[in-house]
Amino acid sequence: MDVDTLFLETLADLRRRSNARPEYEVQQLAALLRKLLLDGQPLIDAVNRSRRLPIRFRVHDGSPYQDLVLSDGPTFYSLQDAFDPETVLVANARIANVNRDGLLARGLVLLDGVWFSVADIVKYVAHVEGAVHRGEPSDDKQRALAASDIRIGGYDSPVVRSLLAVARVVARGLEPLEASIRAERRMR
Image (tube, rainbow, N blue to C red; front, side, top):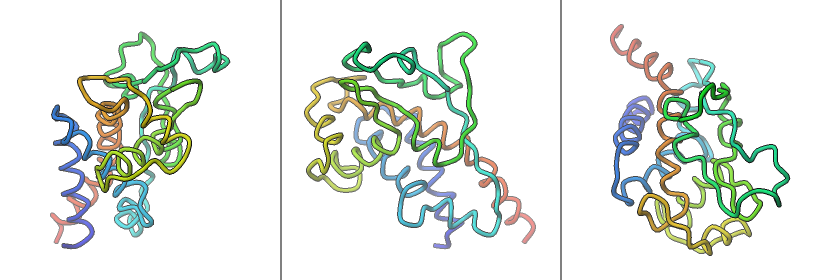
């Protein structure tokens, strides 16, 4: 399978799973997001190398706790659907257009005064919870997530449901790259 086809199939799988409800299906979003955005050679880099399209992701730019001293905030807070500007329920929500690094660095979950980024959550679900392989937590952040007994959306993990909004944001951000590939294929 060529890299463009792999990208298109991965993106289709990401979209399909972003509407899933069974925990296993949602958990597998971490593997797809890792392949697209985080691997040693992320799939979007391989596909975009010759195209050089600017890839941007629209995210909700804020949480009610972002400006508080962390000790003043809640024990647990997760943006969940509010990460996605299309599903945020905040009037006049601030929206940011970020590159891949900005997306991956975005705070998604606050636990005991520590923000966990999109990259933290994807790696945790991929490498500890089993989306890629099941393993032991490798750092303090992963140990904190593993020790949490918070459940959201009926899932055993406090963070799996967060991947639904991340997947929707990523899928929309990759639409220009997808369109470019499809246009090139029509011209052949």
